[in-house]
Structures are given as structure tokens and as C-alpha cells.
Image (cartoon, rainbow, N blue to C red; front, top):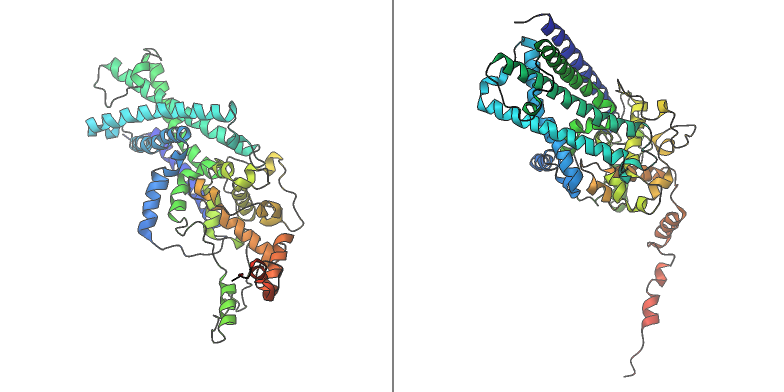
Amino acid sequence: MIGIENIIFLIVAALGIGLFVWQIRKIRKNVLLGRDTEIADNPSERINKTLLVAFGQQKMFKRMLPAILHLFVYVGFLVINIEVLEILIDGIFGTHRVLGFAGPLYSGLMAVNEILAALVIIACVIFLWRRNVTHVPRLSKGVEMRAWPKVDANIILVVEIVLMLALFAFNIADLKQVLLAGEEVVGAYPISQLFVDIFGDDTGRLLVIEKVGWWFHIIGILAFMNYLPSSKHFHIIMAFPNVYYSKLLPKGKFTTNPAITHEIKAMLDPSYQPPAPEMDAEGNPVMQRFGAKDVEDLTWKQLMDSYTCTECGRCTSVCPANITGKLLSPRKIVMDTRDRMEEKGEHPAIFAPNHYKELGVERVEVTEEKTLLRGYITPEELWACTTCNACVEACPVNIDQVSTIMDLRRFLVLEESAAPASLNAMFTNIENNGAPWAFSPADRFNWADELYVPSKN
């Protein structure tokens, strides 16, 4: 029977889901700040990659301990959501254990739920230990891992533990009431039955604990759902589309600028006709930017990457530039892109402050014209990259950090002629001599004459 409690639940659920949809719309708007790009090729290959990398956690298992712990949390998240569905139905229609009609299947599901909930608690405790006691370097070191990123990670882990404890409180109190009433137990609860006497035999107290656990669990889930867009944990949603749209070409293959390609073709073939320049709504030619200076110059996929970042630091931990003490941190490149995008667009956060500003943490010194390049990311960071793609290979959600670095470097070279002196010398030699070396083409084979020794015969 539907009562006032069910109406309150319906209002709370509607508010929680509505706020989440509102935040998702803001995030979508931020991502669409980027340039349009067509990614629709090879759908079957993309689906296979999504199943392996996103659903199957393929790249996580390069580090076995965190992979197993993450698997507990990941599978627990997927399976326990089935019980959340039951809670939603019960909350709306005033039923109790509505899916219990499934009999043995329901019992098996509840048993698996409890075991996974216990494993989630164990995994989160170990993750907290690794972050705050043993201080795993990739989780704590780096200019980007200050204040909010560290607090955010701890909040996520503590909330997950509390949500699982609330679920156990509900199950234990409900199971004890059923046993006291001599009724048939619906479902199987291998963990809760071990602690069935922990709250005593007072039916009034048990009812309060059951209600508090039930309400705390579902409200906590709705609140946590709305916390996700403010958090690195948003990757649990973004990982799947990001992997689907990830790059299928060989990692070392770079994109070309269409405008430059057309110029080269026209130079080599006088009969080639470049396409007409793109026009804006007012009929004026659209300014062609070479490379990227700000987030609008990146593609929507590169901006999606920044919302998918788990801040796990695997990319930075394998970066040869970072390992040898240079400024480059691929994780920082992605996090800076997200911060700048939200600065120019709309910050979707409800619970969390802006990742750095409101915590008083200073970033890179900002120039008069604040942009992603120089305002957040310095040229020194960009030129430290060797384009080895180790970061791309290590990322568990297929973020392409190198593409963003290359686009920012292209702007420095093509728009500002701000390449390092060694590269500028090479460019000059290629222009003048047709080769990277400072030798005239006429002298190119002098080495052969010097090595040639006439035969005595």
C-alpha cells in the first residue's frame, strides 16, 4: 500500500535523478566546446574494445593487486545495483523484497550481493591504507596531486564503505525481525546471518535500524550519484563511451592538418584545387588555427578524455620524461584540460569546490591572456614529451594524452614559431638544404669520397 513514506521517497528519488541529469547536461555542453570530429568507423571493433577494456578491465591487470581490488569494487558496483533497483521499486510501491518471487535465483543474487559488499569494504580499506599510510608514489606525488584530488579519493572510499555498512545494517535488522516472527526468510544472507544478533531482540529498535539503514543506503546512493560529476569517480560512467570512441589507428600515427595538406598538394600539383574555406553563419571565412591554444581548439574526444581520467597516475608513472625528473606529467595535462574546460564552460559540481581555486592551491603562473597553453600548461612540459605513447598504453580507460600534447606543440611551432632552438635549426636546414643537417646538397656524398680507397690493381 502506498503511503506518505512512499510519496516522500518518490520526491527524493526524483530530485536526485533530476539533479544528476542536470549535471550531465552541463558536462555534455562542456565537452561540446571542442571541435567536431567524426568517429564512426569500425563499430564492431569499437564494441569489442569496449567489452575488453571497459567492461573486462583488461588493462587494469598489468598491476595485479590493485586490479583484483578494483575488480571487487567494480563487480560489486554492477551487481549491487540490482538490489538498488529492488529498493527503488519497494520505495515507490510500498512493497518489501519485491523480487523475492524469483526464489532460488533471488537467494543466489542476495548471497552474491552480500559477499561482494564485504569484498568492497575490504578493498576500500586497503585502498585507503595504500593512499594514506604506505603513500603509493603515483597516488600522492606530483604537482597536480594536491588538496582536492587527494581529499576526493578519500571521500569516495569512505562513502563506499559507509554505503555498504548501511546495506548490512538493513539486511541484519530485517533478517532478525523475520526470524523473531517465525516467518520464512526471503533470500540468502551469508554475511548478515553471522551478525544477526548484533542489534539485540527488541523489535522496535530493529525496525528503526532497518528503516535508517534502508533510507541511508538509498539516499546515500542518490547523493553519491550527484557527487560523481565533481569527482574522479565519474570514470565509472565515462569509461565506456571513452573507450568506444578511442583511437583505433596505430598509437604512433599522428593526424595531419587538412589546410596544410591541401597547400602541399597544390604546391606539388598545380592542377589541384583546394576546397573552398569554411564559412561562419555570417558568411565570413572561419579562421584556421594550426594546433591548439585553448580547449576550443581541441576535439570533443580530447575533452571527453579529461572527464574520464581516474587520476590513477599510471600514465605519469611510466612516462620516461617524468621518471627522469622533467616537468611533464601526462596526468596533469589531462587534469589541466578538465579544469580549463570547466573554467570556460560550466562547472557541474554540486558538492565539491572547483578543483584548485577554492582550496587556495596555486597552479602555473597565469599570463594576461589566460588560456590552456601557458595559463595551465607550460611549453617546457610539452617539449619534454618524447611521444613514446607509454602513457596511452598504460591508461586503463584509453585516454590519448599524446594527441593533446601534440596539438599544443603544433600551435607553438606553426603559430608562434616557438620551437626549441635545436628544432628551429633543424627546420632551417630542411628548408635550405632539404635535410636536417647543415650541409649543402652538393656536399651530401663527400663522405663516400673520403672513405673510397682506390684499388692497387
